[in-house]
Length: 87
Image (cartoon, rainbow, N blue to C red; front, side):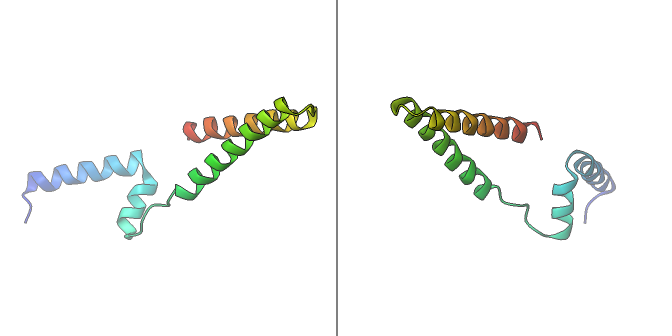
């Protein structure tokens, strides 16, 4: 059994967690695991590699369309990474 002081401290920690990360607090309360970001990370890495490959191919081949696709793809992946870290 916890002492009164320990219960009070535990309630403070619980309230702090509720305010700072409500999703995690709800997941812990409901007993479910937080969403995995492994698939999202794998897809981002795949698109990063594809964008760099397009850009390099566009620079090696005399085809401005491939270069333009590479530049657009790299811009999109950079935007995605920046937006993801702002959340």
